[in-house]
Length: 169
Image (cartoon, rainbow, N blue to C red):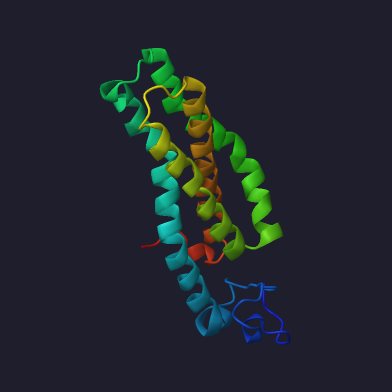
């Protein structure tokens, strides 16, 4: 597919939404695309790292809850560990559809900032051994938002690169 010579998407202000994108056009890629794609990749790396860490948070927290004074059964602890994966898998579909509606940068910013909620909440509740189990279940489910964020962002960042460059480096 070749790109039209009119309406150059890079002539818009930096905060504008990209209206046209032709990563397979070698001329477009060399002149504009590579710079924008690389910038988006570097912005997404810390966001993806944070998403993955929050998604896996209960894998390390659950095994240590009883050591700090909670009294949960093994089944309860396994459920806390599994819930972020379940909610992340279910939320991945709507997350993928939201990216084109909000725009990649806006959605990445918003969805990454939302991840602060389960982290801070967990930080507070582990300090009180009287915290009910259902509170941990809710926080564990909220950590699944990070899994959905991780999965959908990995897919959306590849959109910026030509097929031949996807998966390199």
